[in-house]
Length: 110
Image (cartoon, rainbow, N blue to C red; front, top):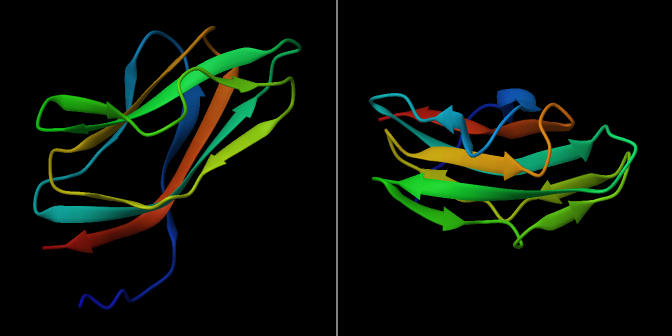
């Protein structure tokens, strides 16, 4: 059993600006335990987005398909995901520059 030491840290944050894009990629010789992914719609109309886990070039959806965010609403994905070096979290949105995202978790040296 691995015992985590330290606090949850911000692993990345930004704004979805285009088609499917990489939010974070795990650095060499580290692994990551994602605690949560937070998505916020800053637009005045409904928007949809999808979040994916990409392991070795195989992308799997980790959010509901085309999750709808109402104006000003927040969606939090908090099932917990473990990623190894080279794995990434990716996302897409129905419009650019209106969905803000934050990923929190633990980064562990291997």
